[in-house]
Length: 510
Ligand SMILES: NC(=O)c1ccc[n+]([C@@H]2O[C@H](COP(=O)([O-])OP(=O)(O)OC[C@H]3O[C@@H](n4cnc5c(N)ncnc54)[C@H](O)[C@@H]3O)[C@@H](O)[C@H]2O)c1
Image 1 (cartoon, rainbow, N blue to C red):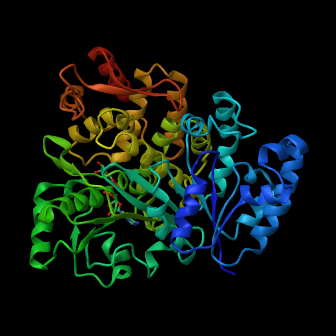
Image 2 (cartoon, rainbow, N blue to C red; image 1 turned 120 degrees about the vertical axis):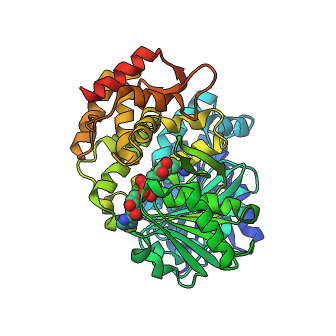
């Protein structure tokens, strides 16, 4: 039985437009609203009026449930906004590829304000209704397509159609930013799959720890470069070494780079792709938790200078991100814990259900992280979509990084892993936010996962302050901090009196 593509989403999300895109690809299509009108012999508002919402939903469960239970021609079906409320319909969706078309409350209301939809009387009602349905869409979705122009589903459709051939449980996010759109795949066993997003030849950039574990899965590749593992490899010198290796191997603009590894490989591999003959595509294959929840997405690529972290870089959105969560099983536990700090940061920034999920994690078990990885990827990509070039909102991702980067830089990038330093930075940022109870809780979470909560290496405070003064994000007015009084409510660009900053850092040494 061939699975169908089932479009779900709130009123005004563009389900009918999506169906037209599917029809244009030759798929058979069914619009549930039309089916319901036929079944009732009236318009939907009339059916609501005559039978009430309960009567409407009961008939919908019957009609849509049996349609989904029988559907086997690989066609496309657009559900009604509230169809997901029915347990029978939800159960029948399990066999199909469910695509969640996202829309926010403001845009939904703008699109439907003048329609006669029975449950959409005003903007507030729309907001409340959307909030109650979001968890259902989120839980059901195999693929997520963000709000975009009218053709976004048409562009994402080939990838959506591929999903049933990928390992079971794989989720896809269609990441969309002004600088490029790309599929993000999160799943188990993706590194062993035959399918690959680009047809051209691949040049592998990896490191000496990851290469031996996974490079065979990428055969055939033209050649590979293996860096020394760790942050100290993220240099301009290594960038040149890789660029020259590509030249020697005859890589052309038709080929592409595969960055297989953690954030270091991803950042350097992305920069190399950006520079090589003024740009070749890069497929990011993140293998650490840091990279799977954060660094692989959003197109910031670059290397460190001795004077400052990530000081030389560019923006280049990947051609695809393939995050195989099975790869986390070979990650040393200390790296896994350090990566968890980016998860913690994302939970704090997003608030809501993600924060609840993250704070409840008693032990970091790689096999249990798939949903969290996908949720973090979605959060990051949504921020990048709104502010790709980091001129405002994207700054939120820097929560904990201002002090974190200064600690890394002042300790020569060797004393702490990136995530460990950011964990300490989170504690400082929360103290500066006067979120004392939250700081205590974050301290407990860090300790629970064996992460440092105190700066224990011998290091002078002035050295950290010096490094802070060179923060890339500083302006003429000073270094702007990301503060967070409550989970889900970050504030960017907050200038803080230097003595308060110093005391938040000294507290880490107490
Ligand atoms: N570009 C961005 O938006 C962004 C965002 C966050 C962080 N970063 C950057 O990411 C870097 C940190 O990334 P990281 O923590 O992944 O560090 P990393 O790349 O150094 O990887 C950590 C260690 O884990 C090893 N490793 C990786 N995957 C493995 C696997 N599956 N099995 C066994 N070992 C494995 C590596 O060899 C390395 O020794 C920093 O340079 C940071 O600046 C970039």
